[in-house]
Length: 145
Length: 104
Image (tube, rainbow over all chains, first blue to last red; front, side, top):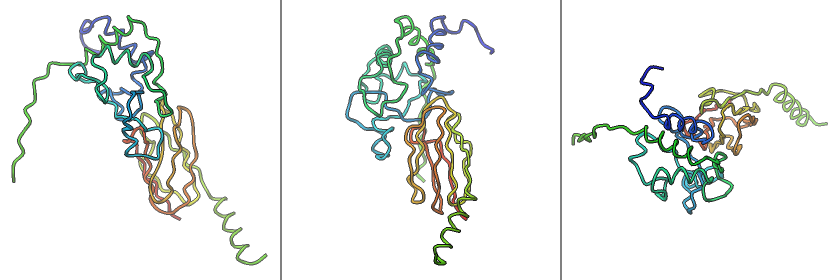
């Protein structure tokens, strides 16, 4: 692969390994845009049934919400569908404990991950590399006619 | 044995004899076909070749079904009895779609 070997830190490189292996992140945050465009119950402890409102006959999508992209994730806090986690570190800890709510619809990949403190720091370092300093886009005005 | 009973038995044997299984893989969060035409009584064998779970279902008037959560490696056969068009989706990954046309 072309590119600068030192473009990101060693910690971020290790975090990418964690992302793809022990952290299970890639199971949903997959592909070039870091999302499978799917809906998952990640164990947020609230009463919002999410996708379950659209497909009430499908237990697997109760409490399920769409996987967001991770592009520029550092600039889009707070996190999770209800904004309950304030920082990236909070989100990583949330996943490391296997979420909060235990119910039948919980995605199979939401379970205690046993990440070390260093692995969680590395994962955050990797997530920070997904942000860029893009120039703000001016929203065009549509013609009236 | 009356004629209608004989006819029914013959018809059942005929359908059973020619019913086919068609394997539809779920791979890279896509079905292996976007559309398929089958005969009444044929089965689609939905096979999860991904490393993630899927939940194939349909709410179409013809042949509604759900096979619930399907883990990696699992295969589930679904019989399509009714003539018509059945739109099949994955509830977890809505971009996965296959249109099943059932006709004699």
